[in-house]
Image (cartoon, rainbow, N blue to C red):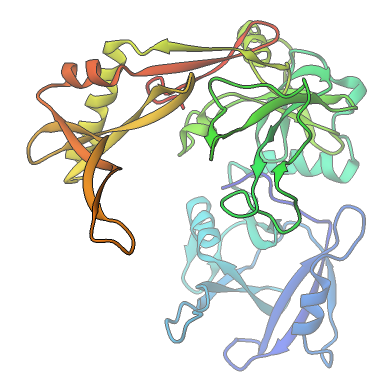
Length: 426
């Protein structure tokens, strides 16, 4: 279960009369936050029966909660209600909890028939969702510690931040503080036409910004659209921000969340609960990651390089494509490599055909054909581009024909910011 559950000091309980409860009263429980503000009051007022007085209780650990029954989960209509479980509160009313909350409770305490749930519980909120928190759970101590910080407002202050130290937020995410700096951001300058992809009713035809010497061509990122190039530049923000390395979670589902990455914040007010570590043995790695980030250091578009893609990388990309095709039982699959076009980095797809076991690309050929002239019986010769499949006997032949490349994009400090079309990096 999450440890960012908010435990208020007081709860506010509104009621409706319900015949399907033991006490004929179903409750909607809301809470006062750390500043004394009543949360979710609008929906609570709309739901409750004003003829039944509300009750305000101290939210302290207590025993006597009893599981009642499942409600919701019906599949009638287009908008079925989520499944909940009703729980009896010993103060004489019932309320509803989610199934994940129920499973968490049953992992941490016993449910005895005729006696209910063993142990003490408090009310908590995970975002907008009410959570009944078992005091005996292994997470409760950490939840308590975070709530002490919230209620006492003892969050880490900006003046107390130490460069290289690791801090934790309410969600359990850990950040390494790297100092303050004015962030950089890149701007792109597209040509807007009176029609087409970059057309806008609010713009005249032409580039979005006046072209001056601040706008540069990037070999890795610039491209032509109807013979008009896209230009780039870096601009720096006016105010300093706090830079951090957000540490990846090795057990996260997505690879993006498993990797360390640079982030920055305008303020850290009520952000960090405590310091985890003052010094890190891998701090030099954090510095390298920071110095290769385009939001920390200015981009050097003129330093872009186009480099021949090594054959072994090409083979590895092809092998990964075949493995995915076989794993998912697809008829075919493809991967993308870089290809130079007009001295810029373009790309081309390389296709794998499972049935034949061959590789092919969609190649462009110039086709000649005859067509009658307008208002005449005479014929004239014309040409047109055609896309055709070009097959290769083996992967090396495909590699030699395409001559794949990849791009390297650098920052003004000389650090490599990233590679394009190099393995899985794009």
